[in-house]
Length: 314
Picture 1: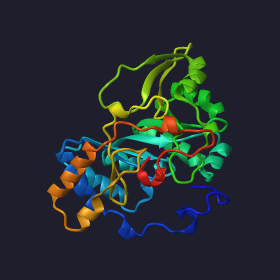
Picture 2: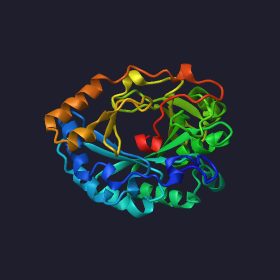
Picture 3: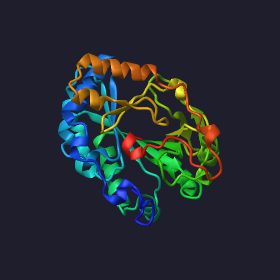
Picture 4: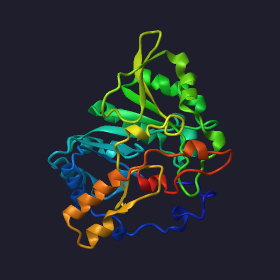
């Protein structure tokens, strides 16, 4: 969330939060998931915001794990609550997690996140590693903020079984901290970590996701995995097969476009399963072929979609 002195006109600071009735209930979410699985979807990711702060989340995950045809449940988290929930997550079928971590320096972590919780995140990561989770670390690359740590993150990939992935800073939100001067292209990030060893591309596999993955091999024989996600400089729209369902019941076919399908309205007006299925199918058919952020980005200009990443599920 923004610092107290910034972004004071947003819902974060006015206290204009969504009411419980604005959110899809777990029963409504399960209904949509089951119908989506009936259409052939077999993998789901719980994200946010921070999914682990929602009351009853472990029981919901347990119920998801019983959905026939759903093969994988993954979770994206800031890692603060991994110590508390890690074992329960693993026991209920979540065995792959993405942890958002933009700095390995506690002071800088506090400045970026507004919370002095780096130690909690690190302890949670170590616990998750010991439990047996497959762990991906998502690092949003920001020039002048954390670009001096890219080598440290590469070392982390060499020393721990973490898949470290650098993500280009995306201009998302009505009013956020995105600035053109903070943007670093993925190719430049790769050049900045080249000194840590030899990068060899992964063989491309179906379902691998948006990252361009590399084996990193150091001169001393250590090895690890690095990835580069480039939605701006090398967008992967032609390979994207993802849908996002927000907590409010809005279905999005593209993270970077504002078009949404109101599934909550259909559900709460007594819509049938077939009507929901047809809405999901139509959303897929209307999935845009790409975005034009690269053309829109100007020095100091705001571009992109207006939805908050915490609401959309980034």
